[in-house]
Length: 117
Image (cartoon, rainbow, N blue to C red; front, side, top):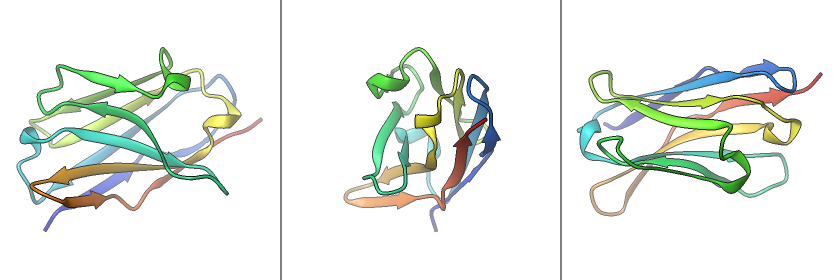
C-alpha cells in the first residue's frame, strides 16, 4: 500500500533552516509529481510546493519563493523540502502528498515545524 512518511520537523529560531524529508513507498515514485502542504492552527491546509515526476519543474506558494526549495531523489523514493530564512508564520504541520493513478490521494502523517525565539 502507499505510504508517505515525513521527518525533519522541529523547533527553530527565526532565520533558521530545516530540511524535511518524505519517504514514499507502495507506488512507482518516479512516475508521479509530489507536493508539500502545510496547515497552521485554525487555518486551512495550503499548498507550499510542487515538483514534477522527473524533478525538472517546480512551483511554490508566493510567500515561500526564494526561501524554500523542493527536490527529489527518485533513486531513494524521497522528496525533500529545504526551508531557509524561516519565519514565525511558517509555523505549521507540514504534509507530504501524492496523487497516484486516478483519484487516489495520499497524505503523510505530518511533521510539526515551529519557528519561534
